[in-house]
Length: 62
Image (cartoon, rainbow, N blue to C red; front, side):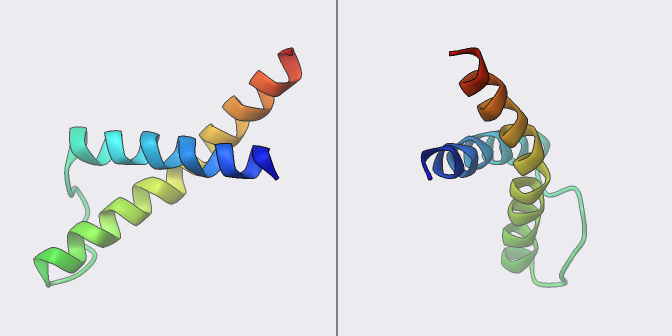
């Protein structure tokens, strides 16, 4: 259970950092606020596999 929580927290930070660094690159909605939210969700979901690997590699080392 803790690994899942760590994966989502890591993905939140990675996705948020990418979103802040890259901005809203994709046009997913015509509404600007909705577009920013959807871009953040896209970055969040895109970083879940990376965070998953980082968490389980880190847990496997200890």
